[in-house]
Length: 294
Image (cartoon, rainbow, N blue to C red; front, side, top):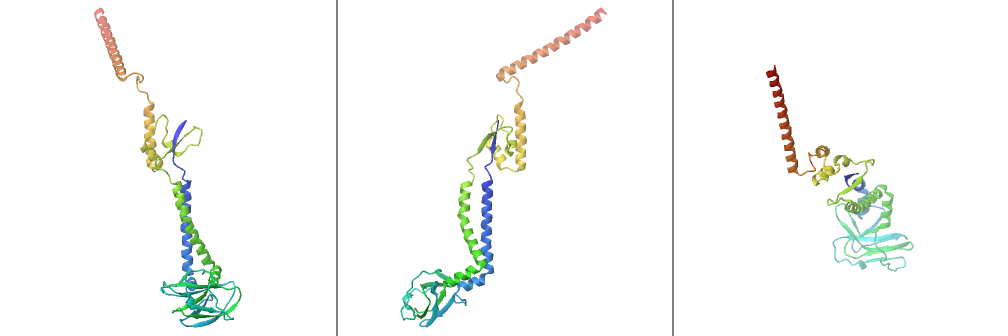
């Protein structure tokens, strides 16, 4: 068995990158779409511009007649910035002479123009049958009658604007998803995943870098093995290999205390030295005997 330090799975990081790429993609599409359709969009949102959904404008103390259709939402807008507006000063009278009160909620609370001016909704109607009405304006400034249903229909018929709006919504929805995904899957630097593998199992790259046979890697080795570049990993591999080879050579008399081993080694050395001296003396004596006998 050999144990291995294993880097946390990177699939969560790849998924986070994919989510970020999708966010960038979906945020670029509405920018391009709204840019190419800016003139059409400005016409829709500015009640002062000519458009089929912009039905009437009335100055103060002015009145006008118009036909309103059922299943449509009609709203009167006025420029923002006026504090004292009484919507009761706008009177809508049908053919029978009866006043039609505001009975619905506007789709767009405010409209705006390209130069930054805004228009606030003050009265909204939704009729159940077609009716010719007269609108009397007494609020002290100009008003605009807008068919909001017509604005919605125009947007739905413009594929670029629809795609841009959907992409904008998608990109906004991706923001919390990316944050939550990253927080859940981010690595904990205080933890380290270490497991045991058999020799016949598929080895990780870290098995070659840190072979933990009878040794425990220090924090520096683990950091270089997991976060280091290829040069650092190769250098670490060579260092560990040399260390393992060095430690695999047993020390002489490793089972004895150091003092005894050194003393015994010294005695053996002295015995070998004295023995060699005796042999040399014997050889010299033999040669002298030959010369005397000679």
